[in-house]
Image 1 (tube, one colour):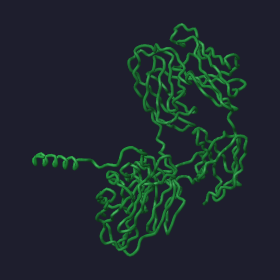
Image 2 (tube, one colour; image 1 turned 135 degrees about the horizontal axis):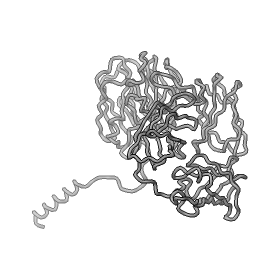
Image 3 (spheres, helix red, strand yellow; image 1 turned 30 degrees about the horizontal axis):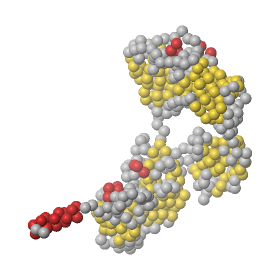
Image 4 (cartoon, helix red, strand yellow; image 1 turned 120 degrees about the horizontal axis):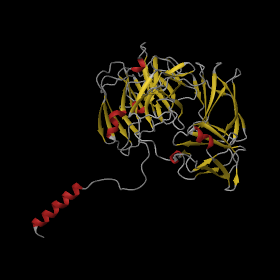
Amino acid sequence: MNSKLFLLLFCASVISWRCAAFAPPSGGKKDTTPPELVSASPPSGTVRLLEQVVELTFSEYMDEKSFATGIRMAPILEEDPVVKFMGNRVNVFFPDGIRNDMTVVLTLSRAIKDEHEVELAKPIQLAYSTGDEIDTGIIKGRVFSENPAAVYLFNENGSDTLLLSKPNYISETEDNGSFEFNYLSKGKYKILTLDRSAAGMQLDQNRMFYGVPFINELELDSIITGIRMHLSKEKESMRLLRGEWKDWFWGQLFFNDDILDSVTIDGLQIGNQDMEWFNHPVEKKAIVVSITDTIRNEKEQISFKHISLNQTILVDSSAINVSIPTEVDTHYLSVVSPVAKKTITPDQFGPPIELVFSRPLTTHLSSNIHIDLMVDDTNDVSINQTIISPMKISIIPNDGWESKKSYQLKLFRHDASNEKHTFKDSVTIINIKTTRPQGYGGFTGSIEGFESTKLIAELSSVEKAEWKFNSVVNSDGRFEYKHIPESSYIFHVFEDVDNDKAFSNGKAYPYQPSEWFYVLPDTIEVRANWDIEFQPFNVGK
């Protein structure tokens, strides 16, 4: 072979070899195993630390970006530690500001991930001291939340705005909501929790979900356990958000909170015309408003003097501009809920079928609408028909629903001077299937370990959020639930200090602890036709 040709082929081979990408074979199951910290050098617990750098070795290659916010140092200093990434090894250089005789805690948060974006299974804390010993104080607890949470710990300094400042220590919850601070010095602390997505930020109590415990402060000597907090958002003052005018005769107003049936709205007008209103048939935070005379202006203002509940003003006077359609609505009337098919579970109360219409019905139409109910396509069923509002009618069989049956609900077109005021089709049909009847059971028990005359026990269904049942705990510590739907329930006890029959979460500023509460670690199974008597719950543990 020509020597020049041989040299050319050899160089091409070398270049091809050097450019080849080395990677694990493709395919196979996705890696879901959390990475592990294999070692730390120097190891956690080292005292008289001289060289302030720690080398961390992990069980696999890590995601470099996750270390940018995943490593925290406590107490928190003005500067963050510097991180040098080396695949499965990471060097952490301590910042300036570390004093003599100081315990430093390095926290590896759950935000740290491996190259497959799998997070650490739980936060890891490593402790070092520049003095002769490491602080040994511990604070443990649990956050009750649907989302992962961060926990802030503050050295108590007497400030009433302490919880709005930068924390001294930050921890995170594990999957079950538990958290732990280690290597703390003796002293007084305050604590709060917020959503993990906001970890590192100062609390904005008007915008963030957060929670405080049911004690004012923590006085740590060696170990404190049993700290419990709920993650929630402060309830905002009610506000009018927006309005829209759907037709010449009616419109909708939307608020930032639910509108209860019992509220009073004074001075509700559009322009100079008084308006009627009723709760929106679907949206809990909206009302439907209507007038008798048409509006021909292109724009108009909706206003009211105030909204009140039991003589308490919820919203002061508000006004909002709306655009008025230039033409009347020409769409046919329709049923927007339920859809063409519906499955229901019979119970002792029905349940009723609630027909929601696309717009308010006239008084004449709502009083004379023709509705039939049939079972198995042959037999007529007598019904009780109730007008809930101009946009909602409730239907329920007089003798209740039969289980495991097929029903047809028929709505017939109504003669009207304007055909668009009624249904497009001569008959609108909704097919209904029933399941086996709803089962009911009972649940009784007693509370031990916390003395109060204001305890309320609460059951919350895991399957259906609307199933919540309260029972006042009597002077003997007993509670009782009769005839509640079969389901898995979370059992919650709280001290109703403010007598409003609802759990109060407390506030960060001005500081107000939450009401005392206890949540049973396991769910309660309520079964049909069973009355369960539980052993006393010791809520003081």
